[in-house]
Amino acid sequence: MISTRGRYALRVMLDIATNQKDGYVPMKDVALRQGLSLKYLEQILPALTKNGLIVGLQGKGGGYRLTRPAGEYKIGEILRLTEKDLASVSCLAPGAPKCEKRAECKTVAFWEGLDKVMNDYMDSKTLEDLL
Amino acid sequence: MISTRGRYALRVMLDIATNQKDGYVPMKDVALRQGLSLKYLEQILPALTKNGLIVGLQGKGGGYRLTRPAGEYKIGEILRLTEKDLASVSCLAPGAPKCEKRAECKTVAFWEGLDKVMNDYMDSKTLEDLL
DNA sequence: TATAAAACCTATCTTGTAAATAGGTTTTAT
DNA sequence: ATAAAACCTATTTACAAGATAGGTTTTATA
Image 1 (tube, each protein chain N blue to C red):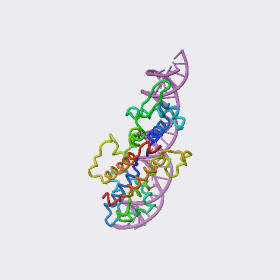
Image 2 (cartoon, protein in one colour; image 1 turned 30 degrees about the horizontal axis):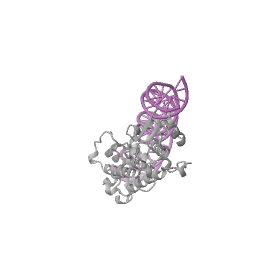
Image 3 (spheres, rainbow over the protein chains, first blue to last red; image 1 turned 120 degrees about the horizontal axis):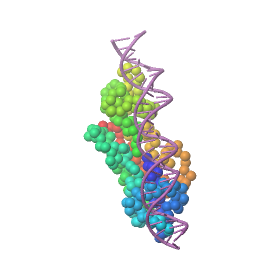
Image 4 (tube, chains in turn brown, yellow, purple, red; image 1 turned 90 degrees about the horizontal axis):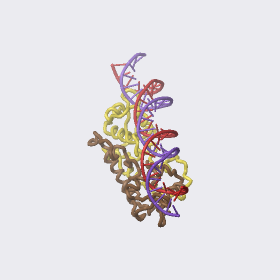
């Protein structure tokens, strides 16, 4: 199940895309428009800024804006950065202790296939598609 | 993320399919082979018995067995019955309070599409495929 | 008919973590 | 100087996953 981190991040990205004309969009405004906690959003944003999806400008008149055209953001990229863990099962999560029984496991290929169709779908849509 | 309920149910179904020759498979044996808690499995099984995927026989010499050939069980069927909730996001979960902002929501179609590709994939594989 | 082995039932506990709250510091335009 | 913004980090709260626990009922068989 996709958590609020990923869902909110997507809504924030869409909100910025919609509201940045040529300036910066204050997160306070985003939080108000979206009905989300500003403080909570502030914890999610570093995942996006540190990976260059958005840039923040500090100080009065500051805010955030996109670094690319909306069509160049795959939804999968946004979700993978903000979700703690997007794997379908915990044993496939990055950093999971590798399973002893992997060689004999009859289900792992199924789960890997599920991860693939999910990621392929999420990468087939861009921010622009949702606007 | 798929929880242990669905993952264990799948392993139980595969174990029964493998070990039922013409008799019944005691869940105690399954738990031992799979390294899972018998008491925990007993809480998951009703979802499968009540929907006719397996039958249980009480008493000495009893156990469980499949009601169909392995090729006639879609994995999606097993997971939808045992997972509390298989929707990608909580607002699409069955029994979720319907969202006020649904009409204007720019993300709901994306999540519905994600649910669809997941279910389509899970329904494209059968128990037999994993054996 | 006593016993063992199985399914079946229901309550409780433990623990991790998602989600949010809280209270700051730093930067920058005016 | 001030206001408004990003940026940073610690703590709290609430809930549910995951399991444990202790039964009852059913049935084969010795």
